[in-house]
Image (cartoon, rainbow, N blue to C red; front, side, top):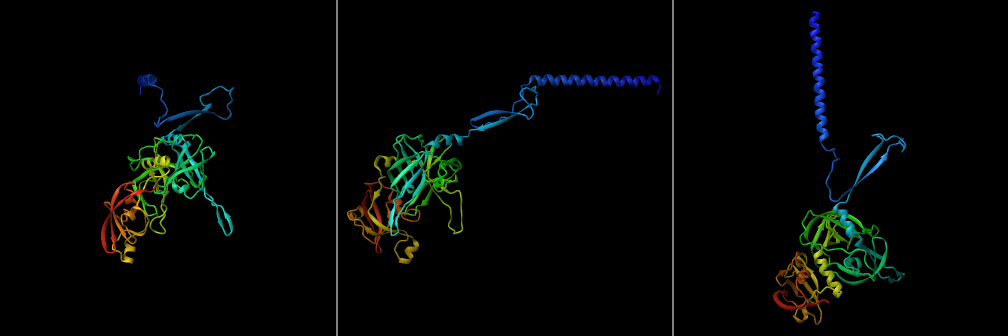
Length: 396
């Protein structure tokens, strides 16, 4: 290579380097101007209901207030407190929920007087007048009552009325309640809706909150007393002993049910299940509560018989003419049944249009009517099937 060719090569390299430098500077300038024109990037925002955020500045170790402030001198941690619909509903309803204490009467035995003990459940204020709605089985058999507020204060209460068939009861305190619940509609509930149960499991864990969903509606459960509890709400929100009488709440903070029972085991002796809780719908609770407050009892139709339920197994053993029904063991004197000519050993198999069977017990069929209604009963007297007309009266 000649000296002249070497100089041309050097010149070519210088020109190429200069062009690259100019391009880099120009490109960087364009990028800088573009970035300068854009808004400052913000933190990632996740939209949630009612979000309230606060920032906490934490000074790094070794940095004092007198030190020059450097970009790395503080670590800023963003702590977000999310007020979800559940917490808002609990804040609304929680103060109105109480623990119900029912003291059972002492009993005299051959070993002396034995204390009846205290049973506990839950309840909820439904009126500014101090009325508390709870379950009948929470207060059944007790002779004195009190309620414990969410803040721990205990207040003496008195029984206004109870209805064993709906398993509801109303107590009253003389003090002004700290809060009162609002009932929501239980007629439009759908499986999958989020619900909240509030109560005092075991009587010790006051105002415990659990959440779940509506598992099903319109359930029927055997009460164990000859009738079905109908139109029940099924939920998987955890309900335990002591939650009875507490509210089942929707996300609007409205009471849509009164928690009443749980199912722990299935048909098999070794079957154990969880998440089977049941609540009385608000539509029923409101009507019953109003009658208890007004009259101290719920008007139910009265026939005036004592009876033994019949199922196919009993019918087969005793060779009865009907597979389902009720066997009349006693007729109350002067009762509607006596006036209609119903006799002992009659077997009632139909009430009005309802044929009695496993899904339609006698009591539920009877409760489709009101006091004062006239209803036709179909029954067997011996092997003869006959019909009688009965004018129902009130249990009150």
